[in-house]
Image (cartoon, rainbow, N blue to C red; front, side, top):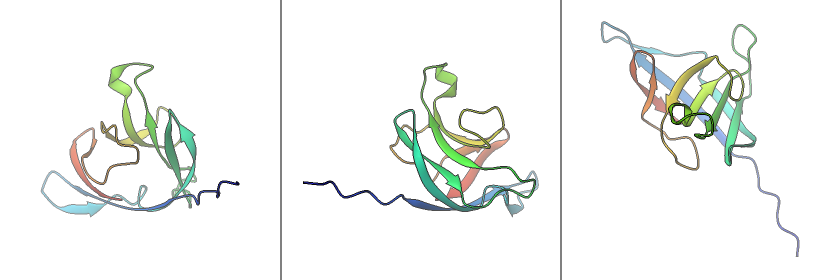
Length: 112
């Protein structure tokens, strides 16, 4: 028999961060609808349907520890495995986790 083609998954991402004065703000460059596009390091990756204000693509993808243990986990970035990354989560889940994302300054609340 034929296998039914799996529909790509869609993620809606809403990211809020807290600044130094405990004021919550929305991280606009990451917010949006992301569509599953393929597989990277044996896990699905997702691309934002719209580009950022500066015209960049935005991805949510997984990177394993083939380069170094420091790199494993889920990432928000402008390209798969690129140097311009925004958030990271060390989870090994099969899909991007809903919470536990961090940036260079601390913990971020992320809703997927």
